[in-house]
Each structure stands twice: as structure tokens, then as C-alpha cells.
Image (cartoon, rainbow, N blue to C red; front, side):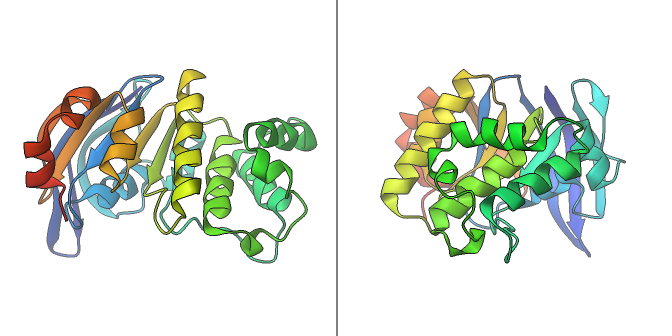
Length: 234
């Protein structure tokens, strides 16, 4: 579904990504792991077209996209949920969800699409008419994910969903990701909570100083304390 080969990216003169290659198959959750500054978020931002200087190859469903603008990548099937969520203040939960439909230029029934996504996110269903930024951090994170999903993307790039969220909501969120995976959702995930991420993932790549240094199944990596300690421990 998502194929990346020899991806390099720069911020000004700083060479952040140095030859990243990875694959995400349809229906997989694949996690990018590593310490802060390893290049995880930059990988997602580069794939979404938010880092201007880059080179390499990337395709979704066999279609190259690295030279496309961010909005063109979105229409091709990539959706990005950044760490800061980008919930629009002053709009209700429902109106924030509708932005995802408008951006996709979906011609379907807007209310029907909102109702469909609300069934997947019961907390949001209860709060459709509430001002979105008045919700808790965990609920806003769910809204950001739902807004990405409502456009029916092929792959979601998900950056640090558990950041700043109460533990009880983190557990609920990762249970949701697991359920969505069973329904065929494809996710490239960046997450600092090693145990949560690996518990729902198929495979994982570890980044260190802009390079992939380890790749294995999530099950094997979950049991490999040495590698976790070497590359992921704070």
C-alpha cells in the first residue's frame, strides 16, 4: 500500500532523514520508533509534503507521490494526524468533522458520513454539537483521527496519539486502533509508548539519527528488551 525507498529530507542545511526505506501493507499497523530527534515526525511530515527539501521515492498503491503537493497527496489517499491535532477552535465537533469531508470534495450526504464516523467514536457521538476545543485532550485526539478517517484515506499517518492524554483514554484509544485494524484500516504510527504501540502493530521500524537501524515484527520487538533499551529508552 505505502512504499518508501531511500527517503532523504533536510531542514535548511540539516540532513535529517538519511535514506529511509519502509513498507506498509494494506490493513497493517506499522510503528516508527526511536528516541526524540531520531526523525520519526520528520518522516511523516515528509511523506505528507510538509518538508520542502527531500529526495527519494514514495508511492501509495503503486502511484508515486513525492513530487505532489500536500493536498494532492491527500486526494491520492494519504491522511495526516499531527501531534498538535489542529482542531479548529470556535467550531463544533460536527463542524470539525465536516471539514474532512469538504477537503476530500466528497459528494455524498454530509450528515450521513458524520453519523457513520460517529458510530465508530461513541465519545464524539455524544458531543457532536459541543465546541470542539472544550473537550479533553483525549477526546480532541479522537476527533482529529475521526476527521482524517471521514475522508476514507488509504493510509493514515498518525503522530504521537497518546501525547498528553490520561492513561485511561490512552488504553481506550489503542483498543480503538486495534478494532479499526480488524476493519482494514492502514496506519503508519509514531508513538513513544512502546508497549501500547507494539501491542497493536504488525511490524516496527526503529530510527536512530535519521536512519533505520532495526526492523522486525512487533511481537519479536516487544520481547527484545535489549533493542528497546538501546534505541527507545528515554
